[in-house]
Amino acid sequence: MEKRKIISLSLLLVGVVLSFAFVLRIEFPEGFEAYFKREYYNQFGPLAISIELVIAGYYLLIGHKKTNFALALFGFTTLLDPLFDQLGIFDSIVPLYGTIILSICGLLSIWLAFANPFELKPLSRLVAILSLVLGTFVELFFNKF
Image (cartoon, rainbow, N blue to C red; front, side):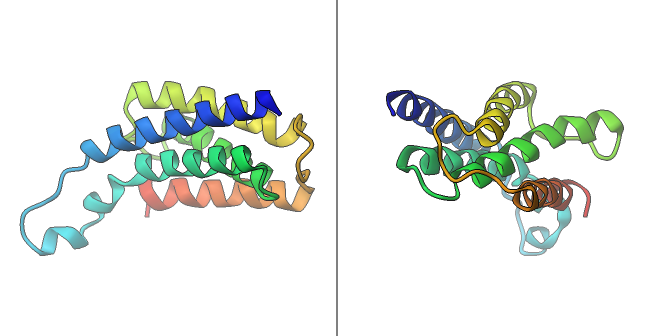
């Protein structure tokens, strides 16, 4: 239980720090029309990923029954971002430092979700596929559509 708290607090800390860093990067436009353009909303993609990390870290801290789903969702969303960028599907706006830190946390989260070392509610195949689909949707929503 002590390891779970250390890992969850670490994930929470990284998520909060990155959330603040990504909020500071958001450029708020002048004029009312600019708020309805796609370029404005695309800026929130990195923030959405870091908020997923905060939620997953919090769920891990309290031992919530949806912890493994939240970890898998965050992990897939995080790892799909650089993958889609490398495949040329879109250009990621996550800065390099964010990509590196989030990828490390994403790999850890995927491992925690599927290995279930803290004996939380295990992922079913359906929920694992759902987390992959939702992670893909989040990535494409903030970057493609």
